Image (cartoon, rainbow, N blue to C red):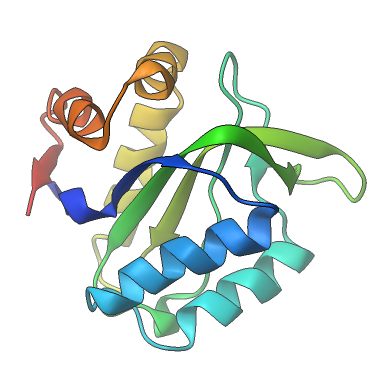
Length: 155
């Protein structure tokens, strides 16, 4: 079972670049106590070395994350962008992905971290789920969609 905090589901935000989006999401995770003050800078440093843009279809996403030493408790922040934000494609130096959804992952070092990652990727690799989330008109509607999955539960 993966807990979700509805305060971490954000809709209707514009960002000039991926750094601004990561900083925004990281600040929410930090304010709510899920991550340490080192988290956001560590995510940004990792993103430069190991980009996380994924050309998922029909909705491209990005899944920035960092090491468990920067995390207090596993959680994720989902931001559905009004306008796509460019992320470098995973495994590529040059290719860029116009991400429409960012899942900013905070994964702790517990024995459940692989289960957490598997649950997240299983849900968000489904194109129909991503399409529904992108089309949702509010954070509340996104929460309703996520509530359909038995492996997710709201905190």
